[in-house]
Image 1 (tube, each protein chain N blue to C red):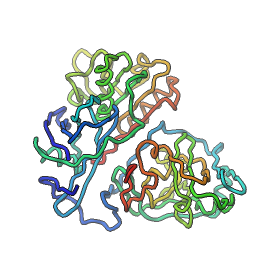
Image 2: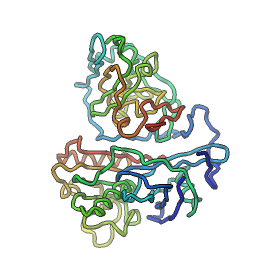
Image 3: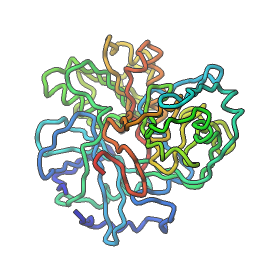
Length: 225
Length: 203
């Protein structure tokens, strides 16, 4: 069981829940945890959520959760969970969509897909190696940007598809080759995370720019509540 | 540890469909896409499927040849480890039994490693892909299988979690041992029975 120690709003539809685990967990940037809810009659519902804070040897993990209409777990998290609640967590899970902190990485996120990439960016900063990563985040509008006190930044750019802040030079529109080209480096692994449609579009842009498919790792966030 | 969650009643759950394994929910009409690699664009003109390894006669079929085999269909349910299930679906293609019969598994074969045009792999006991339990399918509900769902053809092993039903499958390698595939090396269960919730390594 893990205890909720903090809840912070990222956007109108996303909150970051800080959990204290019973003990520190060895983990990697990009991994996820499963939240498992159990009703008194034994009924369970569980969903996976990516960790947003970098591995630091502590027992704290931040899970950023988007509230999905009809999403049994995400609605409960947003509407019912309070600081002090104890929840069943399982993890960390996943050894593929992870970054070890030593090799160049291009991080490409769409909307909520920024979450595991943020753990990677924050790890790079924590290690004092921010030059290893470049992050490009695509969101509909400024109101949809998570971690807006940290993004954009020296290692990151934000691309707006529907509406952009005043003064933005780039015309609004979908992520394209011009957005990613300046971030390419030979040998870098690309991590693409977002909806299935975003993941396909962004990975095809990368392949079109000459990135070998075997250097593109994809994580698709399904709207699975 | 068995402990219920404060305030969680699961009250908005529909009456539990007996076709749903524990921890799964009915995704309805949606069909989520979860893959770890770039979706490949495969041409059926150069597509092949092979059965190799511990077989008497390693065999490769092209698109036309595999379509000439005895057709076989599946009607039933599929279950993804990310907790969605899709009920009452129809796939058609060819039974893995038909493919194995042509290649003739050796008595020493105990497991298969399914491999794909993308490099993806997944491991299965031979006993889980024989006796009408597994297919290579190219039609979904009477239409060509969409690319994001593994088209032109994928493996279908519906009694196991759906990552075992490898998209863009290109063959089966018969082995005398279990050899973890892509997700199995990355934290997921070697078997993956949804009714036993064999989701992760250690379950």
